[in-house]
Image (cartoon, one colour):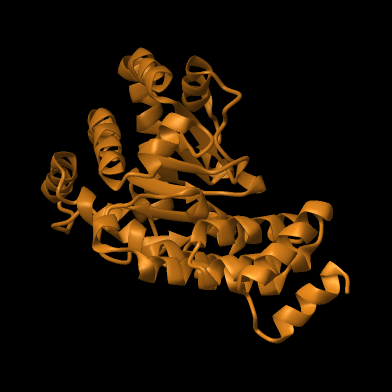
Length: 318
């Protein structure tokens, strides 16, 4: 009996133990494009609670065939079981390659459910930081409501491979923004941290003067950059891995900080972009950044430092 036939028989009998693991490993080594073998291998790993190995096998399947519904369903199951299995000591674990694989391959609503608890932990932890309190106080002095920077369930899926959160009331304000991005459309796996301008007209919380207000805020932002912040922002971006982002593309890594700041100053039609952002980007492919992403305490400190560095610029616009 050949390996493929034996692997199928074991799967039909719901047997995903050591023999099934060995058989499917042999198949994937001899035929790396065999989606069925990778999927069965993931199931074997799942039954052994080897969640990272299971997620890696499924990521291989979805790289081969992004439309593989069985692999997508199994990826959701892996993520759920892994979350349930986390001991209390891991409550402050950050974002791993497994999480970014799930974000890249799951439907947006499923990715939001899977990663939601960790995002919520991050946002609620940020509420306790000094800069969050300063932002809330500044908004309150300007007549805006809110006692917390982030409310619960304030993260949103923004399409494939994209989850984002912005501070309370920030839809029509220059806002402090966090996002997870993963997949080919974003040229990698990233977390962005910084200031965002949602310049797209319309939206479910539309206001008559909201869009006009955002355009005005961006013009004030440009004036601040040109007069007082040009060198300061460029130096900060150079030191801390800062990039700009505009439109529906990933970070503009091709622009060096001085060029990126100049782009912000000279942008003539921000509404056509719909979205403009400047801040720090953590890349999963960078070992130092991956270490920060993987440790919630380090991540909270990094976000706090970034928000603190950009607070005065935001306040000058606000």
